[in-house]
Length: 115
Length: 111
Image (cartoon, rainbow over all chains, first blue to last red; front, side):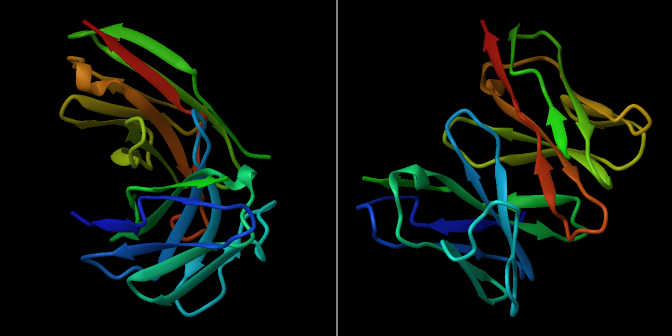
């Protein structure tokens, strides 16, 4: 099956710094990837749709200048959390669609802790 | 607005059958998916319904009624490893594979 990886799996940073998270599709090409955020014991909230070679589409309420998304190739999308604050601490998960798009394949997630 | 409601918690015993419901209200609907997520892990795909009726995959079955905006996931022969969160997700029409997730049901399987 399709495999999606994320790096790093966890990161701790100081308030005010920026953190980059990578999402890679390992055995298929993904023109579209998705970024989600999940707080403890809550659901996955779609943040943005990452489109290869074009600008990302952000969901309502998500600050595009704070959460920078770059999808420079068919196998890599990056999410940069700029000027991170403790309230940005969360589990960030990416996904990529497969085939006829009945399924999405999820990465293992990145746990971000901002001190 | 959009909403997908699921019961927050369900408890069942090993070997039993459990049904987890999902009611949705979305602008545009293409299909309903189900995902399993163990604590701290990534969601994994279980099942997908685009048409009314029952889809069966091993111990897992999923049902959809588009007219009622309702679906459910049925797990048979419960095992301890089935303890996890289960999310329904709507694939919206007109959007490229975009999923909106439900509130999730935490299933606890007891011996």
